[in-house]
Amino acid sequence: MMLRAARAAGPLLRISGAGAVGERIRGGVPSTPAVFTRGFFDFFKKGEKEAADDAEAKAKAKARLSDEMSRGYFEDISEIRKNGGKIAMATKVIIPEDAAVKFPDLPLESPGGGTLRLPLVASPPEDSSPEAGGTVVPEASLVCLSFRASSQKMAESWSLPFLDAFGASGKVQVYEVSFIDSWLLSSSPMRRAFLKVTRKSNNPQRHVAYAFGDHYDFRKELQIVNLLTGYIYLVDRLGRIRWQGFGTATQEELSSLTTCTSILLDEK
Image (tube, rainbow, N blue to C red; front, side):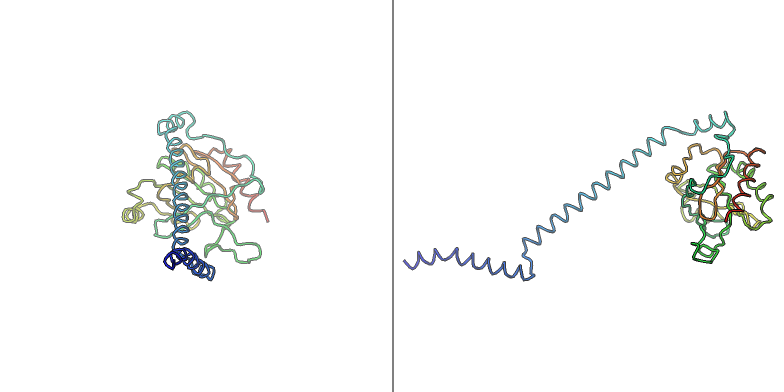
């Protein structure tokens, strides 16, 4: 009889013990099964996020491959032969402030070993300093982009007349940017050696700079397709594009650039 009572009391004692453990859990000490369950779901969620990120990265890579394969060197050179690099005519009037888009962020390196990041943006109005990160921000910057050596002369057809017209004002700067997408030249030792032998500028208002590495996203932002021509942008002190040109400058286009720059320098 007593043996049967002990056997019957066993489950009750175990339940009582579980209740005591429950009290301890509610007191702030988690049970091992609870920790395991929570850890399992955290790991599962992390795996889901990594899988989603991986799928997104693969989708972007696939889209880029399709985009790059849709147009190649031969398409670019065929277009250049047809229009001489003039893929579009330059802007005839200044782009209004409220319609202007910001020039994409672009880190650069100079032959002298210095670094620079475009666009240069002036401090907020409440800050009386005319500098951005220790660099004086010009009222207007002419940014000339060359993705191949063949377009560097195109850039100079804009930059040299621009400096002749506005250099004496002390309010403008020119940035002639060459893009180096070769992984070998972009590596640290080769990059340093390359910068030592590249062309330099003796004019403090004319900056020769280089952008190394992959710039696909940068090109997409500016809708740059043909890499054999030059791309010219007039950027204001807030980093906004107010005028743009392409290829080799014509007298008519230089006239529009001069007019738009004068308007920009007069803006308050």
